[in-house]
Length: 611
Image (tube, rainbow, N blue to C red; front, side, top):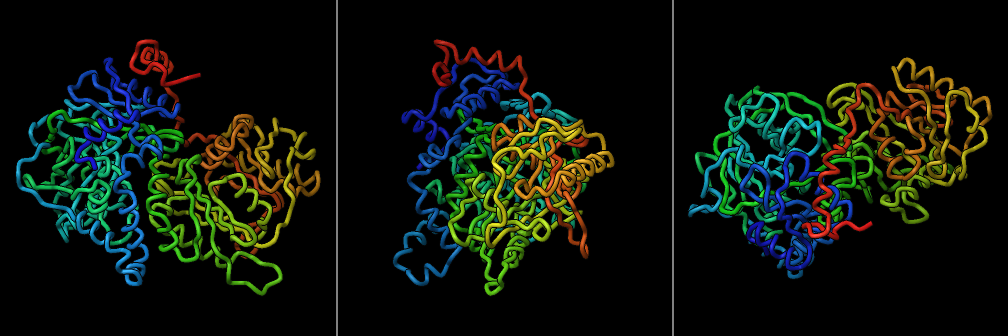
C-alpha cells in the first residue's frame, strides 16, 4: 500500500478518483467552497496545485465517499478489521488459533518502528506562514488545520506505545496568536491529550506535542478511530497502511518519518488564549473560548509536501463518510463494550453528538402482562457513560422483539418508538450534566441535559398521517405541517426568554387539551420555520435536536410530576433558535459566485457538477 500521500494521489488519479485544479485558488474561503460543491455532487478528490500565498499543494475530499475510502485501503482493510475484531472478542483466537494466525502477523508487522536514519520530513524547516492558511467559513477566527494527527505521550509512561494520536482542531492564525510562534489546540480534558496535559500540569512541566499532517491516508484515519483498550492509533495506522509506523525523536519531540508536515511545540501549564470561532460539524459556529496555547518549536516539511484538508459544516460532509467508514471497520465493537446493546447510531443529520438511536435487549420482565423498559434503561445509562457517546443529549432506545430494527432507517425507527412509548412512564431526564463543547443549546459551555426515551412491548397507538383537525386552528401557532407519521411542526413567534416560552407552551398545551385527547400525535415541534423543518427528515433531525436542550425545551400536554418523575400525554419540543445559540453557517455569496469560474468550459472542474 501507499508509503506516502503522493503515492495515494497518483493512484486515485490513475483510477479516475481525483482531479487536479491547475488554476490559482485563494485559501481564503475559495478552496473550502470548491470542496463543498464537489463533495455535494459526489465528485472526486481534489488536488489544488496552485495555492495563493503558498508553495505547497493541497488535497481534499480524499475520504468523500465510502467507496473511495475503501478503494484506498483495499489491500489492508480485511486484515485490519480482523485484528480489531479479535481485540473486541479475543476468545475467537483461542478457539481458532490457526484461522487467526494471519491477524497475529498483521499486528506484529504493524508495531511502530523507531528509525534514526535521514528523515524526508525534516529536509526543510519552514514557518507557519509558509503553509496553506485555509479559512473555511466567513466568520472563522483564522486558518485551521482540519486533518491533523496530534501526538502526545503520557508523562508518567513515556514512549510511543502509551502515546495518543488524536484529531483535535488546530488554529494556525488569527485572534491573539503570534504568527509563527503560537497556535491554538481545541480539545476537552477527558480526551487522550487532555489526560496527558493534566498529568504534565500536576508535574509542573510543559507537555511536548507533535502535530503530523499528511503522510499515508491510514495515519489520518487512525487519528479519529475509537479503539479497544490496548490497541494504539500508531498500530492501526501501520496495519491500514501495510507498513510500520516509522518515527524518530528530534529535540525530544516525536517525528513521524512519513508525514508531509510536522509542527512541534509545548503546552505550558495554565497557558491559554482565545480560540475560534470555527464553522463546525453541527452546522453552526463554535464560538471563541479559552483553549490551550501551543508554543511553536519547529515546523518541518518534506520535499514536494502536500497539505490535506477537509471542510466541516451542516451534515452531510466528508466527515460523514469518515464516520461510516469507521463504523464498518470497527464492526460490533459497541456490542462488546456495552452488553445487551445491538446497535448504536449517532445520527449524522443531527450533527452526530446531539442524537443517538439505539437497539437493545429487554429480558428483565418476560412474565409481565405489560412490558416496560427495564434492561433498556440499564443499557441506556451504559451508552451515555461511554466515550464520545456521553456527549449526546437525546437517546431514543427500543427493544428489538417481533421484527428486526434498523436505526439507520430513521423514519421507520422513530415510528416504531412513537407507536410504543408510554409518555407518562418512559421519558427519563438527566439534568445539569455534560454535553458537547460545540453545542450551545445548554446552560453553559459543556453544560446541559440529556433525556432517554425508551420503548418496548406491543403497539399502543396508530400515528396520524395528516395534520389532525384539532391542530389546524390553534391561535398563536400557525402553519402546521406533518413531518412524518405522529409528528407535527408549528410556527410561532420568535423566542425571547424561557419565562415567555413557558407561558407560550402552557397556552399550546391548554389549547390541545381543550380540543380533546390526541393520542395519534405523540410529538409536536414548535419552530421558526415549520415548512423548512418538515420539508425533509434531514431538516427535521437537524433543526429539532441541534436547537433544543431537553430540560429547558421539552414540554407536555397534561404534564405532571409523580415522585420526581415527569410525564405527559403529548410531548412538545421547542426547537426555535434562542439568543444564546451559536449562529448557523452561511456561505459567502460573493465567493460562491467567484468559484463558478472553475466549473466553466475549459476549466479544471468542467463537467464535475451536472444539473
